[in-house]
Each structure stands twice: as structure tokens, then as C-alpha cells.
Amino acid sequence: MAAPELDPEKLQGFGAKLLGALNGAAVALMTSLGHRTGLFDVMSRLPPATSRRIADEAGLDERYVREWLGAMVTSAVVEYDPARSHYSLPPEHAALLTREAEPDNLAATFQWIPLLASVEDRVLECFERGGNVSYLANPRFRAVKEEESDRVVVGQLVEDILPLVPGLPDALARGIDALDVACGSGRALNLLAGEFPRSRFTGYDLSVDAIEGARAEARDLRLGNVRFAVRDPGELEQREAFDLVTAFYAIHDQTRPEAVLRGIAQALRPDGVFLMQEVAATSRVDEDSANPLSPFLYTVSCLHGLTVSLAEGGEGLGLMWGSERALAMLEAAGFGRVVLRRLPRDRVNLYYVARK
Image (tube, rainbow, N blue to C red):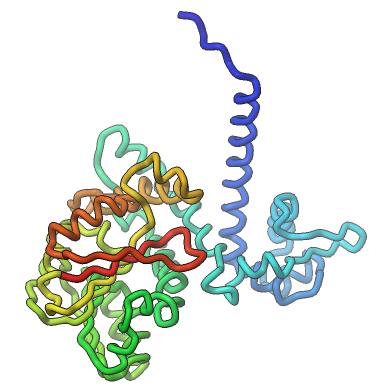
């Protein structure tokens, strides 16, 4: 069989794309380090400075800082003045790379790249023999997800996310009963409990450590209107107990997502609302290609979301299960009215406002 004739222009273009991906992966690793070491934060506060000054201010080893700066300069993240050996972080870059920039700090998200790479060997075995990789494969998974939640959910919850449901902030101010499914360490729920003292809040999660952390924070904040319990979201077994149920990045990870959604529908009062946050995918890979972040999101799903769900005996919906499948599952669970909402400038998240 004759070898196919190659299109030189297409070959050159694809080669350039691969080179860009290789450099991008390297920059991702260095950006993660810049966030974890606090170097971006330090540089945003300093005038143009030498590597020694930057390292001293950050409390880090100068030789390693200098090599990191080399990667940042050659990737055009950091600017360099060769005459004075000064490095500087432009304010426009700091606006997307520092903790002060929340919720626009993208440097925190770059932590996913080395984190996912750390389980590559384990996932390779799953490709070859099936199986799964649990959260326990890398203890930092939960910490990074909590940090991401602080940025994407907690940081925008009161001002941006709640108003997606017409009248919800006013209802919370008057006083309602609310449940957060798979609440993790309870940061979002504790924030709401402090912001809306007339409402009553409940959080369920399977993680004993997460619930203990949530309770500790509630005690520190002296919140009397919130409670947390270790409970399987697939076994709610409560009827018409809540006016509001929320689930942030939670349903696709559940062992029995259909059972969770049915339980949520039963737990809601007749005029209650379910607010669900998931990744803005479509359930169709060809349509997902229109989202420039889809390669990253599918990678997170393959190396984390999918395999973690399978590790718990779940269906393995994956992070990119998408709106088409989500809407069908919501309807099957008893939600007859669902509205999809987005936040401006947010390419990642989709919010489902569901009522029975």
C-alpha cells in the first residue's frame, strides 16, 4: 500500500502546533511553581529587581529562582532588562497570576498539570487492564480542588452565582432551608450562613475529614445556623425538607448520580430550586471542540474525574458528561423546568436552575 501523500503546509502547521503545546506544557509547570512558591505575588509587589532580591523577598534559593525566571522570561511572562539584570512582572500579567487577582488568578489552575502528571503511570495501567485511580493516589488532589472551589465558587457565590436564580438572595435574607450536596470542607456553606443569618443551612459529604474541617470553621466563625453531617448524597431519604439545594462540581463524581438527583428532587419543597454547577460541556465531542479549554477539561476528566468516580464504584460520567445528558437525567429525576445560565467571561462553568 502506497504511503499517503503529505500536505507540506498542513504538516508544517501541525508541527508548529505541537511545538507550541510542548512549550505550553513547560510553562504550565513553571506557572504552577510560581503560584505555589508565591513568586508571582512577590514580584507583583516589587519594582524591577535582581534574582537575588526576588529570592530574598520570597525566602527562596536564588539559583532555583534564577532558573525559574529564565523560563518565565523566554515565555514572555516576565520582562527582563539585561543592562541592569532586572526582572519585572507586568501589572497586566499580575492581574491574572496573583492571589490578589482572585477570582481571576489563573496560576492556581495550572497546578492541575503537575498534579495530573503524577498519576499518569497509574492511569496508563487502567488503559491497559481497566481499573481506576482513587483520590488517595495523590493527597494534593483534594487540596487543589478546595483551592479551585474557593476561587471559582466561594469567591463569586454571593455577588454573582446566587443572583442567577431570580429572587434567591432576597429569599435567603428572609430565611429558608438550604442543603449543599457534597459540601467538602464547607467553605461555601459557612460563607452563606454568615451572610444570611435568618436562613438555615445543612451540608452533607462522605469525607469525615472534610466534615470535621467544616464544623471547625463554623465553630471558629460562631455560626449557629449551619450543620454538617457525614452522609452519602445517594441516600438523602428526605422529603420536602429544603427550599434550596446546591451542588457545585459534585454530581458527575457521584457513585449513583441518578439516585442523587432523585433524592434531591424529593428533598425539595414544591416551590424549591436546585442550583447545580457543572462544566459547560455539550455531551458531543464535535461541539465541545468549539470551547478552547476543552483539551484541558477532557484531560482533567481522563486523568482525574473519570477514574476517581470509577474508584468509588461509580458510573464514570466524567467531567465532560455535558448538558445534553445532564438535562435528560434531571428530567428523569423529576425536574420539569430547567434553565441554563452562564456568568460573563466564564468559559468553564454552566449553571442549571432546576425546579420540579
